[in-house]
Image (cartoon, rainbow, N blue to C red):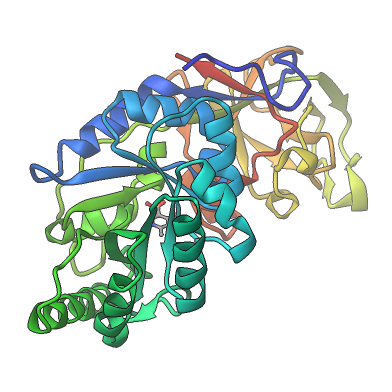
Length: 385
Ligand SMILES: *Cc1c(COP(=O)(O)O)cnc(C)c1O
């Protein structure tokens, strides 16, 4: 898979960029694959433009490193990968609406399915096209979002078996709290087991099963079943251990995205100078303020104003004043002289120092998923093969 130029039309010529370390990504795929029991398949989840990393390069790297299936969120993401020549199996995780059936069938994508009307419409259209449709039946074991209730699985599966053009690839469920709550996760897994046992009791063949997301695999390794669906861990974020299970063996993951910029200007300011909109910060001493060409239009959350650090020359410097649309300010007074043009890291490594995406997201009162997805489309992704 080639390295595409930045898709945002700005080319690679911008000092603010997200470096994507594809070698780290492939490492994560391989090392997570090694934790799987023999025969367990790996779905690499590349939804939301691969959590902001770029779906096409990550899809290629994932397949190269041994993934079996690609998971996208919405069908448009699957179509885009097909348009770019990706031939690997692609699964649409949130499922489709009836008017998306033709696209699904024409482009050989599989879909999540949990309602009878969609099943009937899909089966009918597949029959008309003399085709079959690959479906994964979703079971709700306690997420309250998509899925047939675990108690209704046998009846639903019997109904599906009557639709001959539907090919049931799996039954699966999604864990809501595998990084927070062991009891609840066990309850979900037990409900899934019950559902599978009731299939057995009714003499229905049991399709392949998958339950685990990243936190599920790392915190409940016994729940692998026939496949795992991994997203965040592939991008180098290790889901937190559970309070009840502090000792776990997890592979060392490498962070994939490094968000960088460069100093646009050094602004020497006397004491008592107000900085940025709303005068939220006033210098208490003669200061050197670095202006960075990155702001909330690039996805740098304005609510991080005055509550984040960056790395310059391998040292931390505090961001000060309100984050603007295109710029933000950093106090580099305490650092060895910083020059215009010097590299600045928002998250990632610089020399021995690192700021993790976990740190930035915690300071912004959110989760690494959102921080990664929020890096804006104005920020070119630069791929390090
Ligand atoms: C996004 C998603 C995943 C991946 O979850 P991570 O926590 O990123 O590993 C797995 N399964 C489904 C259904 C998803 O929507």
